[in-house]
Image 1 (cartoon, rainbow, N blue to C red):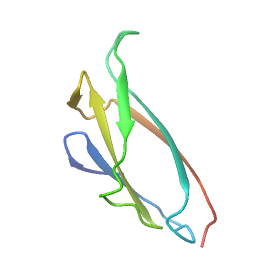
Image 2: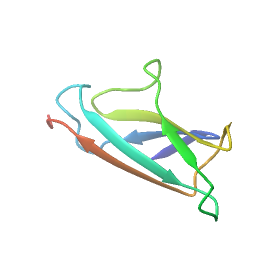
Image 3: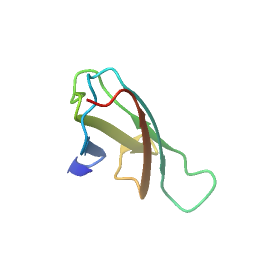
Length: 78
């Protein structure tokens, strides 16, 4: 995972998928209380290739580097 800016990161795969049509499920954890909701999202305008995936994290409505991030990728490997 490469931190490219506040709230922006790119996951670089060691083993590429056969194409950029895989599925990603992710969540983030940030803050210290139960009401501290954080969001992870992606944009179709950014990095989404067979070997890399860019995502954004928000906390309190603003871009934020989350304390912890979790991702699972499903697809056919090359």
